[in-house]
Amino acid sequence: MTPAATPSAIVVDAVSVERNGVRVLESVTTTIDAHRVAVIGANGSGKSTFARLLNGLIVPSSGSVRVAGLDPVRQARKVRELVAFLFTNPESQIIMPTVAEDVAFSLRASGLPREEVSRRVIGILRHYGLDDLADRPAHELSGGQKQLLALCSGLVREPGILVADEPTTLLDAANTRRVSDALIALPQRLIVVTHDLALAARCDTALLFDRGRLIAQGDPGELIARYERELC
Image (cartoon, rainbow, N blue to C red; front, side, top):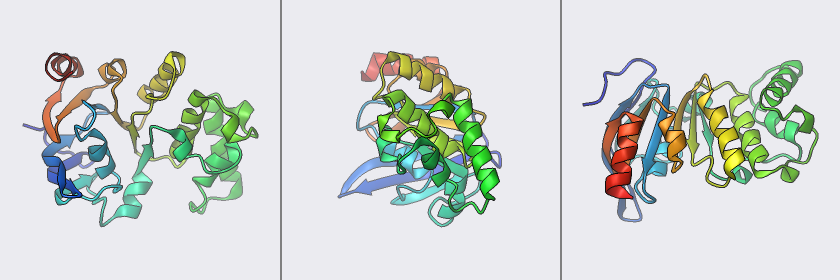
């Protein structure tokens, strides 16, 4: 049984996703109301498909998704203002030549005054230790710095939710810890798809997927143990 929904909850009701004639998600139903949520499971279990439902990157074949009461398909613009998405490879999100320009690009349609854009950009770069790199070409950053830049570009819009899809997969141990610490400290609700079980263990709750189905939801320690025992 899933917990009762609050107005800020993410509610997924009987969602299936079919791609090229193959069911990649099958009848997923859940309510997410925790602050930090880990999504775990083997490769191909449906984790990333599930994550992409939450901001409309993937459309359900059947069933419904509501994010704080919003439909990611019919209210896509509002949902994407609410939900930021962090991809595995930050190169797919870095668009502009320099660090500061890339963060500012996220605010291009905000209508904010130039002074406010500058304030936000400088503030978030300082918060994540990238302010000294503001004028550096983005492609010259290390892998960890690029992932933090992608995080800054998502968070500068001040969303309420961050969905992160395998954000530490391409990082070394030191940068994995740095990015993990940054994610866990977020005031925003965090939904993190991850094979990093140490990161998953630091979340408040976990979802365990297997072969396109959500098979368990609950305490991260218990679900990690089940995953390692039954599915690895």
